[in-house]
Image (cartoon, rainbow, N blue to C red; front, side, top):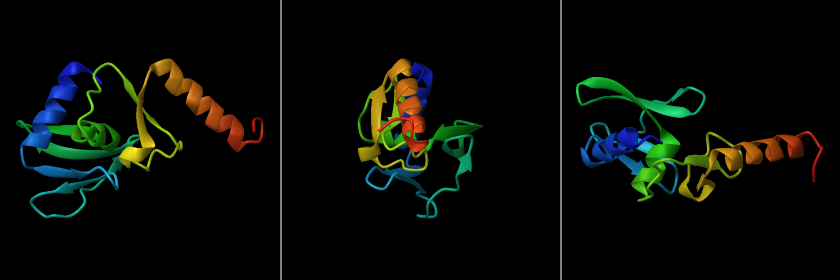
Length: 115
């Protein structure tokens, strides 16, 4: 995540507009106390008015920031390969090359090329 996006995510989390449940990987609106609507682009994303503009934040990145992780300059890997599963226990910081290698390994095992 770029430094400026990381700082913006931290400001959003501190603004009181949303709360993040890191155990179930869900983002809630504090105004409605309901899960925020998700768009898929290709990762589950929330769209929110923040700092005078419409902003998009991926849920997996918000979960990591809300759990206290510094994710500047790294990628977030979904350990089980399911982009919809944004629970903190399913997310890990990784490099771009390791994230790509993990995706290929999961794809190969799903089609029976690797045990």
